[in-house]
Image (cartoon, rainbow, N blue to C red; front, side):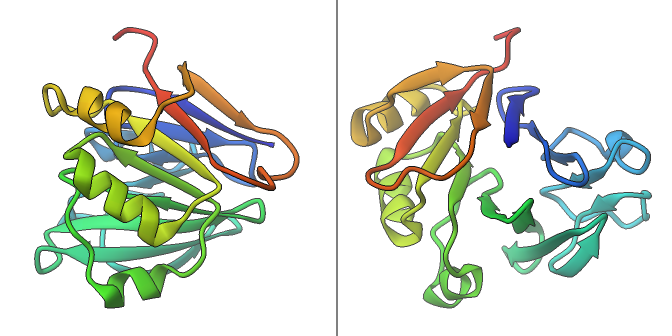
Length: 180
């Protein structure tokens, strides 16, 4: 069972797999002993347990692929965690090229920050995940726009993916940090 827990409006933690994964924290201090940290902006200095560059990695039994945007100045990720293929889109969410979408392949879970509703709808249609997790993000009013387009069924500070993925339809959750 994978558990997605909100840390802030744009970062979260995935536990339940072989290694905990912290995604898009403000800095990499949570890496190393606490599992893997995925950063949205490449860092010049290495931090143990942190991934911040495009490329393919295998850390702690988790396969991670970093996909670069803006000439490598921003990174989104695809990770296979406990047999579940997840995509984590970094902020600001950008339009993806066909080549980038193809490099991701089939995913079960898509996590992305709220941004322009039309762009979110386009990306959801392209990736077609079984589970969509939306982070409130930092763009004022963006969450409301996304909720109108996507249709949110649940709001929670934690989402547990228990057992099998939904056979039909799509689960949609807004992952809110408890201190929002």
